[in-house]
Length: 136
Image 1 (cartoon, rainbow, N blue to C red):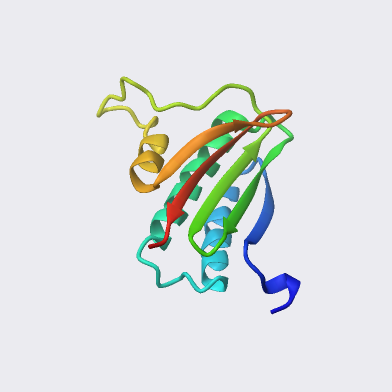
Image 2: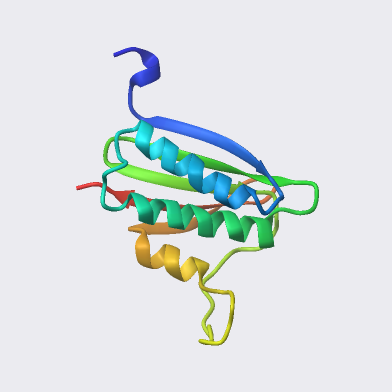
């Protein structure tokens, strides 16, 4: 095995602040999981959905005009980790009072429910919102 095929695998892709970036990030995630041999994994759709939610949040709340976000996917043979890096301020959190009639505010609820672990880290400028999925 050469250096390019050794674990951990990592793929990075930058997206501009545009609506088309969310489906593009999802396709990039699906392609990466397929490339890593994880397309048939029962949680691959969960990973893609969480990436969509994190990318949407970055576009709506984290990427100032003229900026974008970085999607980083990592796989170490056990854990798939998705990170969305943006340059916006603030700390994402799950709302305490999500109303059934509200159209938004459920993205991080989905991420928390579907992933094994999620969190927010600092970067300068901005933040990194991540989630992890463990393969048995």
